[in-house]
Image (cartoon, one colour):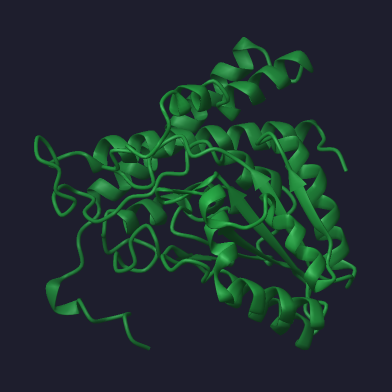
Length: 328
């Protein structure tokens, strides 16, 4: 299953939007946090987890999805939220803690929820899995269309919920695709020190489902493999486990000193940045030139700038409404 010209350009554009968005958030996040870093200060308080480098994992999957398909994600969600079509203005306002945010500013960047496109995420490790399986079950029981995609990090594959979710999805042949974004690190612990096997995709065999490993952080390869898995799910052929080799170009969170990384690792990863690689692919295929590339870059910056300005201009919720929307 190969992407057509429109899909390739869509993937590149959304990779740009995601990267420019995170670069803007990174700059704004540090406002008020210097010279002594204090995550409580500035217009965006709290932790911040950036997904730059992992953009292929978003676009290669979401290019196949519609608004009725369900996506659950992790504490590092921006790239997938953008590719799934989450309202960027409302998402940005949510990150700023503003009343115009998706949850009125009460959830922050680790708890983005947009029912219009069926996207949600959680700050708890492995907690994308259960909701995705439940959503897929609901679709089957109600005889509705749509698949569920659960994203998780490589370390989450060692949680009990991972095995419970895969087992249930396999027993009931549910339309779920489990996507492991393997960036080789669980916070500061390397995968080789926490996981007994080299590839988590091999664990699929224990649950009688296909398991696929996609090397190289390649959005087109991801598109190909995931497209086949989604097609199987839509045809009632059950779940698939897919492990994607990707790169975390930043630290685990903003302010992470990253002293645990081996010398030279970050420089080596920067040379594998997937956005220049995607641009070069499109240039070589004559799907992009300097003029059209500049136009896409300008458009992506404009989308991000508009969302940032909307969030800055929005008001905070009134203090007396602090508990509203929290308990239902």
